[in-house]
Image (tube, rainbow, N blue to C red; front, side):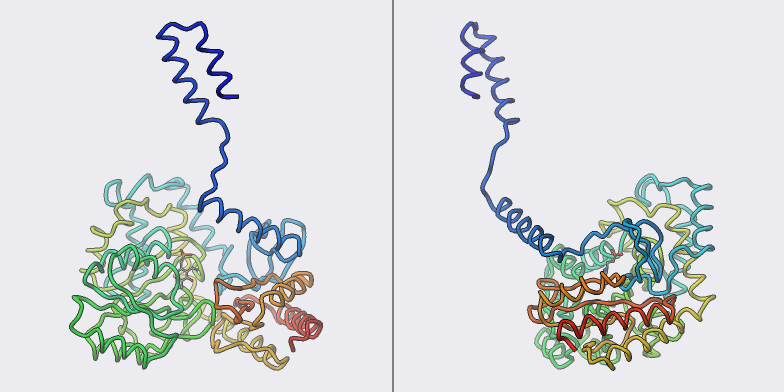
Length: 433
Ligand code: PMP
């Protein structure tokens, strides 16, 4: 086809026409659909086959369309009202009138966008207020805010670590910590999950071999629901001259008697060198932050690439985060209620015979150990009005496929009873309990 078109255009041409026709031919050549068979094609084909296989087997649960606010119940686009058991909004603050009002007011005052990066386009007083509030909430001198928790981990590790340095992380740390190491050019090693002997071995082997050693751990592990061993990790960092960074994504609002996180939980306020958190889980907004000593935070404000090259948080989300921190401190009953709901639910599951692994928090995994059965269990729970999330390989090692369930302070006794009933019926039908 291409060859025929080219011949037709050149038959009656002088040299100028010939050039034009060659140009047109090149254009046509690039717009003709071409089928490449390379690594991308192979990846896409494998994905499409897996996705379509799951859909055909009625085992596809991702990207579920939601029609309204997510709280302990959630309105689905197909009209169903489900119990939400997959949200990170642990304190149930989405839609809190005071937080919504703060966001509305910020839009009225500032509009919807920040207009660029803070270093060059201007820092709003709202951003400064949020950073002061986060510093105070975290018991630190200063805090700086980034556009997401994911970006914050990358910003901290790439900002402070580089070639010649070593990052030592728990095997189950969040992907953004791994990505930060990859981008930073530093060396990185993982220790077996919460295995302090292994961490010590790595630190003792690394002593005097690197300029800087940074140990990084999640405070609450998001797939297992257990807690890092802060006392032992701190002790090992002191013994081997390492700094300590902790990702508090799942502990703010959920750990400690008043929801201030892992340091409150262990009564070790001030023990973490670099505290990282997100504004998108218990705090119903978006963004992430580093809370630390003022000189480190101000260095990051001027030197870390995601702060320099990425736009500031929008005003509404900034104001919402400030209001949420106030609400968490002024409504401590939410944290207590979250702990009570979690205890009631976890005990109920264990009494039915389910394995909830080492969870001691509001993130409660339900171990199934088989991908197909995990999907079948999810389907049966979905059909009984429970919104849950299957976690299968490669997100977790093969043979540890599970559901990850998350509690909220706002779950009612009726919600929990409905969930436990559904687990009982589905577990028995599938021979899992
Ligand atoms: N750290 C941990 C432990 C997380 O679970 C997540 C999000 N799932 C993040 C960081 C990233 O946070 P964000 O969603 O705000 O980007």
